[in-house]
Length: 165
Image (cartoon, rainbow, N blue to C red):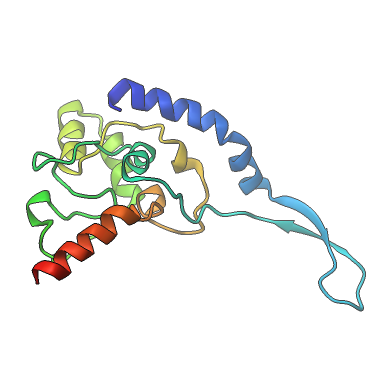
């Protein structure tokens, strides 16, 4: 999914997540009895977005990342700065991408600079990413760090690495 389709997807997803965002902001009122000898008391529960489970392609769409998995793709993951050319190095000193870094790149007013910054991170221009509104309780990585590695790819990668030494 690219460009306009991806931005349209996030507009729809934003509408779907509207109630979740409101509930995160206002909380969820609940009467709870926490201790046996006390009567139920009102509490306000706040929910946080901890992680999103999906496959590699789906997670890339949620994070607004380029769906390319060739050597032409600048980075191998939506979570860190490991270049495709270093994907076979398990000791590469990865620096994780933060939500703010991607948001800042999307906010650049110079279109050429914006496109270059996003392309260097393997991201599409999606300033309205629906996950940017979700509360992740201080997780600076946001959706970019809340999408676990696709288990199939991780397992196959580990096995291949172990078998080749």
